[in-house]
Length: 87
Image (tube, rainbow, N blue to C red; front, side, top):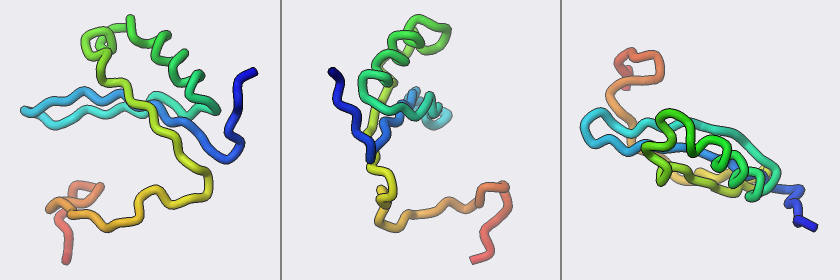
């Protein structure tokens, strides 16, 4: 029987690296197990776009209720709305 982590989830991303235009990241889904993520990869890897970048699938496990980003970050000159930052 497959062990289910009740206090964590598995997140599946697909990231297409592009030096010219920047990376293209897609959140595929949030799953209960790593095996569920692998099954989603199997379903998607033959579809248009994904089949050209099969190496772009990325699975990460996250603990529920835990901060996963604990450091600051360097911002860009624009905020989410595309407006100039005021600071």
